[in-house]
Length: 226
Image (tube, rainbow, N blue to C red; front, side, top):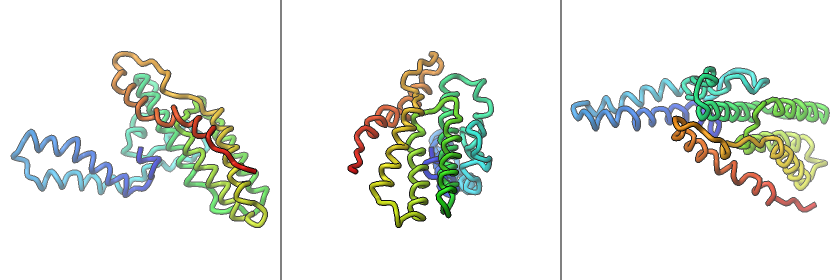
């Protein structure tokens, strides 16, 4: 999840090292007391440092949603290319995570500024065309899509601040939220997985349930007084 919530190499390295400590070296220490404590600490630190030099997002263009958008060393980047040969729960999880990396990548690559209205409208059209491309549009991507449009509108507002009021920018963002909420409707909640997928299936349903179950209520509860 760090790949799209905070896609920073240092954060990724710290998390990776912590996971190695928690899932590998610490259990080994419990099993074999003879292992020196320095080794238990050195291994996750060394691996974490190596991972920190790797970008948690890939360098592929964001033009196509089906590209591998999560960085090396991540679960998604490793298994996404072979997702069609894995179980349904793994396939759903990989597609969702890759879509989240893709939208996060677009957020990071928003133009630093707009110099004309035509440039802004063209960028908005390109963004909308991109977001319409995924065959399966997952609801869990909506917070990042909202962040994406919030950043674009904010950059336009900085250029156009003499003419736009705060209420106008809020309404523009809300209109985009409502539009994409009708488009990105795919959820894991209604998915039925085979018995061998039960553990992973329950996990991803739990992981994504907060957004899937409450996003529509959130959007419906927002009002902008004109």
